[in-house]
Image (tube, rainbow, N blue to C red; front, side, top):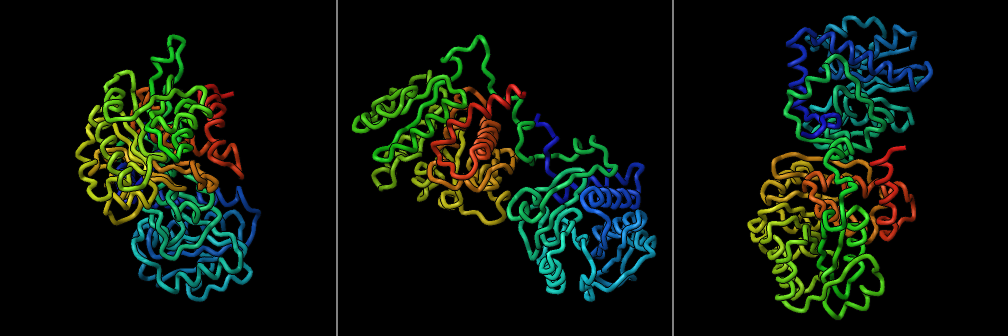
Length: 492
């Protein structure tokens, strides 16, 4: 079972947590008071005392804002509330907290931010599912224009909690949310709009998370480290798996990067299968990687029938001509027929664009497909947000889908999903994807579960890039993996 520490809550799951909590012994009003106190504490930890305006909407998010304003006021801060809508339209817990407020209240449309030095956004929370009205956008943009620091309660107004999509949101410097993050905090562009995210437990109790059917997680070693293959004194190179890569020609760098990555992440043996014409190129640049010559379908059949190979990779540098595609399709289907772990990347994805169902039907064993957005659209005709599309693609294909990007999403056919957050923009460079497919391959070769192996590889990929910093090229990434592994498995 995946560690729930990094679980993300959908809007519906958060509402369920509210119902479960308030049905026990914690009233909604007390939960709201605790939320306001948590926001106030986050503010006083980061800013000295200054004039604050709290922008409050008519619902529960606004109620959290009323509570925040009161707690700051009680601590001596200069606070005023700008209310969207009429006070006589408030009800329930938000009305109660509004009635507890005895400071200044101005109409939302009259906010000018004159003399204000901090803005609290409590207009709409994660449950908003429509574009913002023009008057709300104009106020948020006015605060942005004046360069006032903004603190959002739950999510910045206009960010969709389940998707990270923005409908008029502006960037804040701090977001305070409750119990767990939501997908909107970690999927782009939401992640960039949220600034620092603080998660506060305001009385839910951590045990409540186990009752919510959680299946979405932020990528972190806590998710997959218990299943990570750790070298053991009784291991030998054969027991650590044997990775086989279909090497391309004349494009040879992609397969070589993948092979080095598979070896660096722990594959005991790594082999690239290549046409004979490519032997001088591969042989001159690889020392620890083995080579197999393939000149015919019989050669491929011989390799795939060898049970010592524990995982396969096909796609990097394999070619883009119609003849290349015909050959790649045959080899992909042959690999999948073995029911051994297979990674399908790059050209091996695109070659099925005319009939992706052939590919999906052939997937019976562990399989990982690693598209970027362009490759994804060639085999999946799906609409919707990134998380929804990745999940649905995994379900219809029967494979683990790694939809790459700065917010790479890894989805399993059973509906679980992991969202990655540690990848820097510098990974947008030629060959970085080949390194990632090689890392996944190396972990699969050692017997790691396909879903968790994909998440681990994506995280390692991001950490390596962060360690290297600006100016990285793909060649740097495999060499950075040992230090990451050492810190991960033997923390100092």
